[in-house]
Length: 437
Image 1 (tube, rainbow, N blue to C red):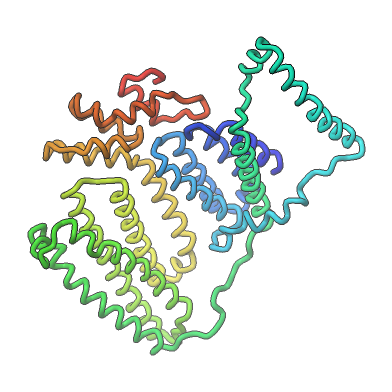
Image 2: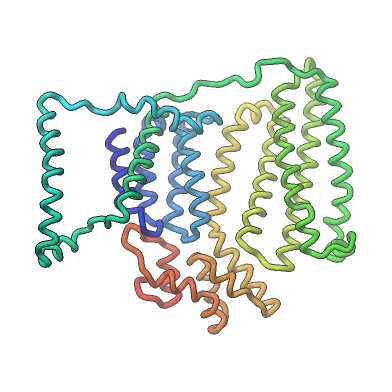
């Protein structure tokens, strides 16, 4: 564990600061996972989680969109934490909590090695001042030294900080794998009687049903119906309730979780009532999510697709998938027993699919399609996209393409070192006819 953790920290400190993300990121991620390799011998599930974590980290070498890569790396870290410590929410903090065991794994030098260690430290202090004097005294010597791949003085603090951070992460994962969380039994206290959970659920179902009844007129009424509804425009209609509807869907999970945790169905009839009320709530909440997606699609038809709109649309789809999973947990005990695992794997697979679809390219493709239909395109916004969008942007006419890719060309002109090798940037340079492709 110590060797892989130290290797990950050194590679990260040497290759990542000051450069665009690329092939070095999955290399560091693989070394960090190897530091926790003991955990992956426990179960096939942990192997799957580790593989998904590495697949998300690999996106840094495939995509140029920093916002997507940031989501992927955050997801990779969460998956690695769960793989090392067990699939439970408490396990997410395990890599940090287990660092208190770190002193126990630090090797203690033997009496034979102690003089060597002291000599190496004294030698480093002795060499540095003489090296600085030689560099300032002779230009030729300084020129040869300048050819060495040494970090600049300005980058040393961030390299040291990254070394410490990555080392702590790798060691924390390794220790979490050695000291996993045990099974936790939630909410051992008082349970709710039939009236205490059935009445609130029935009232919620009635409220959701009333809202859904109104939404069906809008969902199947088309664009004219939307415009006639209280005199709203597309933008006003989409913005008037999209976020509230997503919040409703999210709060539904809280209701389902609380009822499943505290309800005490005493017989077969109570269990049937519980399943029917919760199942209806999940189904109606799913229609609410569909309504929110419909609002966003109308807005996109009128104003085009952006990163934020794509992200919130994807979030709505994820909420819909989680509602289906919640309904399955309500219906069968088999799904309920594994709902946490299924939610984690489904979310990770969804994030990976989202990344592999290249969101920036999808945004560009939608805007190019809109240009074909309307003859208008926002080149200023397209310039803010990453190199992932270039395969779609090259379909624009020469003049428009030049304006839509001007900033992207400038970013790509700088080139990349081998550690920042990235498939999307290589492809973009080739399509734009730039050197370095």
